[in-house]
Length: 250
Length: 267
Image (cartoon, rainbow over all chains, first blue to last red; front, side, top):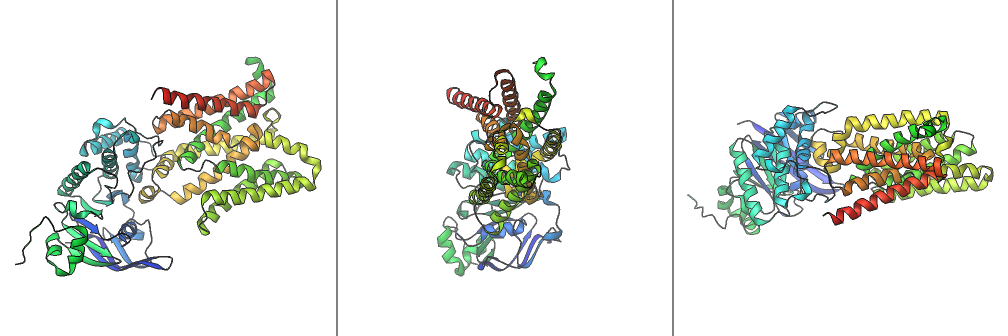
């Protein structure tokens, strides 16, 4: 299968402090990858490199078979950043206005929204079951609802890949479960998902692969492979990844 | 009202005032959302050095202030980027350096101190033709810029990283926003003076934000408040001989307080 994201020998340092070292990773269409690792392990940095927010000093990143510097089709990629729900209480935006921001990557100047665009915004809100809130201010919503709106923003261009960085920070337990179910459903519809989390134990029912990093890539494979590999016991303990599973080695 | 408008100097005052009020409200909304609200204050201080230098070297003070304002704002951006100094510190450093230069020039060339006062406190009823034309051109550029890029600027204000991922030229738009703010502050110099120029950037947007509306409504309300305050200020100067700048700021203060109280009462 042709990978849609390919990372080859990528290293990155902030000033002289090395954060990532020789990362090699291939993500195929339809994968739901849980990117895990302890705090400061370089998860967010790797995500920012994939998104082109940071530039790697060594190695190569390809998106949809194009080197990242030549890649222009950013509408194919939806992004939900870390601290996404930390929205200023005075920020003057309705749900509909927030979702419309996602369309800017496919609009030409002067970027006037058409009826077709409004239809896309409505459809995107329907996917996350927030269609009744389009006129509400984003700050009037709960953390879980805000997160759904941000997913709708990321989905409005019909992306093929969705990247999420610790999306459930500040969201209560009940809403987290509903949120992960939503991601699982999106993945079943064919959207490739990369989810950065330090608490990935909650989503083992949805992820198809686990990428564990701690400066280097320490593991990449299925959940079952992860749990059956003795080398990962340290991580198993840390992330409580395998406690509710009972895999038996063949 | 009609009698007032029959005078050319009043026509000039209203044209310049309404344009400046519109530009300030548009830019101010984004500056407040980006938490850059004191940037305008810094630029006003920087421009004071330019006014003094202009008067010393017999160059139109408007041009002196504009050159200093643009160089100073660029300096703040670079200081922040290259030296990793926080924005508020960078604003303080550059603005006080230029303010110090202005005071130094004024002290060694005491002959133009009276002229300096009119730039510090504004004199909208004595706008020169060249200054009016420059104000119209410069604020016209600001209004066109914000009209074209308002959605991009709004996205950057909400989430800079996501905007970057969407292909928006975040660094370029940030630089243009800051440079155009410098232009607007200098253009506002004749109306409210350098001392109060940044008030037109802050008050209308801060007042509109109290209403907790959509972004589109907020920016329209901020513009209406800004224009209204300038019209009241100029009219008060004509009919009651009140200080234009002071009246504009007081009207803005009253509007802000009314909306702040109303927000608490009708919560």
